[in-house]
Image (cartoon, rainbow, N blue to C red; front, side, top):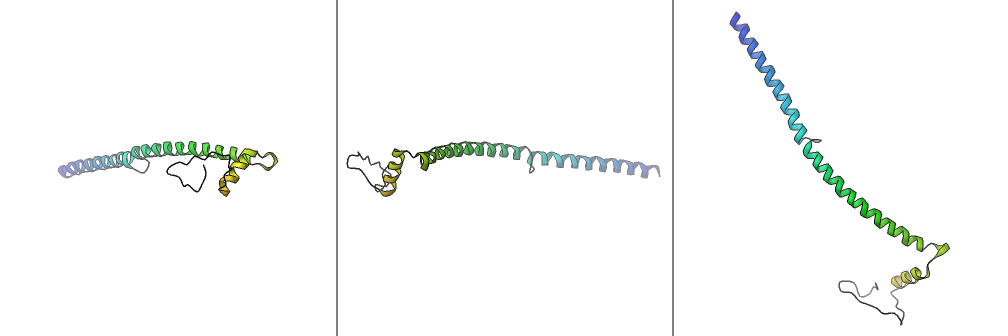
Length: 111
Protein backbone atom coordinates (compact mmCIF):
# COMPACT_ATOMS: atom_id res chain seq x y z
CA UNK A 1 0.00 0.00 0.00
CA UNK A 2 2.91 2.29 0.61
CA UNK A 3 4.08 2.03 -2.97
CA UNK A 4 0.69 2.99 -4.37
CA UNK A 5 0.57 6.11 -2.26
CA UNK A 6 4.14 7.03 -3.14
CA UNK A 7 3.52 6.47 -6.86
CA UNK A 8 0.31 8.42 -6.63
CA UNK A 9 2.07 11.30 -4.86
CA UNK A 10 4.88 11.33 -7.42
CA UNK A 11 2.36 11.18 -10.27
CA UNK A 12 0.31 14.04 -8.77
CA UNK A 13 3.44 16.12 -8.27
CA UNK A 14 4.56 15.58 -11.86
CA UNK A 15 1.09 16.38 -13.22
CA UNK A 16 0.92 19.52 -11.07
CA UNK A 17 4.34 20.69 -12.24
CA UNK A 18 3.57 19.95 -15.90
CA UNK A 19 0.24 21.78 -15.61
CA UNK A 20 1.94 24.79 -14.03
CA UNK A 21 4.66 24.74 -16.71
CA UNK A 22 2.02 24.55 -19.45
CA UNK A 23 0.13 27.49 -17.93
CA UNK A 24 3.30 29.57 -17.62
CA UNK A 25 4.25 28.62 -21.17
CA UNK A 26 0.83 29.67 -22.45
CA UNK A 27 1.07 33.10 -20.84
CA UNK A 28 4.65 33.53 -22.06
CA UNK A 29 3.65 32.77 -25.66
CA UNK A 30 0.63 35.08 -25.43
CA UNK A 31 2.79 37.81 -23.93
CA UNK A 32 5.11 37.64 -26.92
CA UNK A 33 2.89 36.66 -29.87
CA UNK A 34 -0.60 37.47 -28.60
CA UNK A 35 -3.03 40.19 -29.65
CA UNK A 36 -1.46 42.64 -27.17
CA UNK A 37 1.99 41.05 -26.92
CA UNK A 38 5.42 42.46 -27.68
CA UNK A 39 5.17 41.94 -31.44
CA UNK A 40 1.77 43.64 -31.51
CA UNK A 41 3.20 46.51 -29.45
CA UNK A 42 5.90 47.11 -32.08
CA UNK A 43 3.24 47.06 -34.77
CA UNK A 44 1.11 49.54 -32.81
CA UNK A 45 4.10 51.85 -32.36
CA UNK A 46 4.90 51.79 -36.09
CA UNK A 47 1.27 52.46 -36.90
CA UNK A 48 1.20 55.32 -34.37
CA UNK A 49 4.31 56.88 -35.94
CA UNK A 50 2.87 56.64 -39.46
CA UNK A 51 -0.46 58.07 -38.39
CA UNK A 52 1.25 60.89 -36.46
CA UNK A 53 3.21 61.85 -39.59
CA UNK A 54 0.01 61.74 -41.66
CA UNK A 55 -1.74 63.88 -39.05
CA UNK A 56 1.04 66.48 -39.23
CA UNK A 57 0.80 66.60 -43.02
CA UNK A 58 -2.99 66.92 -42.89
CA UNK A 59 -2.77 69.72 -40.31
CA UNK A 60 -0.34 71.61 -42.51
CA UNK A 61 -2.63 71.12 -45.51
CA UNK A 62 -5.64 72.24 -43.47
CA UNK A 63 -3.85 75.39 -42.32
CA UNK A 64 -2.90 76.21 -45.92
CA UNK A 65 -6.50 75.74 -47.03
CA UNK A 66 -7.79 77.84 -44.14
CA UNK A 67 -5.45 80.69 -45.06
CA UNK A 68 -6.55 80.48 -48.70
CA UNK A 69 -10.22 80.47 -47.69
CA UNK A 70 -9.66 83.46 -45.41
CA UNK A 71 -8.31 85.36 -48.43
CA UNK A 72 -11.59 84.67 -50.23
CA UNK A 73 -13.70 86.06 -47.39
CA UNK A 74 -16.37 88.34 -48.92
CA UNK A 75 -15.86 91.06 -46.30
CA UNK A 76 -12.17 91.50 -47.21
CA UNK A 77 -11.48 89.81 -50.51
CA UNK A 78 -7.98 89.98 -51.97
CA UNK A 79 -8.08 91.15 -55.59
CA UNK A 80 -5.04 89.09 -56.63
CA UNK A 81 -6.48 85.86 -55.28
CA UNK A 82 -9.83 86.58 -56.89
CA UNK A 83 -8.14 87.26 -60.24
CA UNK A 84 -6.02 84.11 -59.97
CA UNK A 85 -8.98 81.86 -59.12
CA UNK A 86 -11.18 83.37 -61.85
CA UNK A 87 -8.50 82.87 -64.50
CA UNK A 88 -7.85 79.32 -63.33
CA UNK A 89 -11.51 78.35 -63.37
CA UNK A 90 -12.34 80.07 -66.65
CA UNK A 91 -9.07 79.20 -68.42
CA UNK A 92 -8.51 82.81 -69.39
CA UNK A 93 -5.23 84.63 -69.96
CA UNK A 94 -4.54 88.35 -70.05
CA UNK A 95 -2.64 89.32 -73.23
CA UNK A 96 0.04 90.93 -71.05
CA UNK A 97 0.63 87.75 -69.04
CA UNK A 98 3.63 85.52 -69.54
CA UNK A 99 2.47 81.88 -69.66
CA UNK A 100 4.88 79.08 -68.81
CA UNK A 101 3.81 75.57 -69.75
CA UNK A 102 5.19 72.71 -67.69
CA UNK A 103 5.61 69.17 -68.91
CA UNK A 104 3.46 66.53 -67.28
CA UNK A 105 0.54 68.91 -66.74
CA UNK A 106 -2.50 69.48 -68.85
CA UNK A 107 -1.93 72.36 -71.26
CA UNK A 108 -5.60 73.39 -71.02
CA UNK A 109 -5.21 74.54 -67.42
CA UNK A 110 -3.04 77.46 -66.39
CA UNK A 111 -0.65 77.17 -63.42
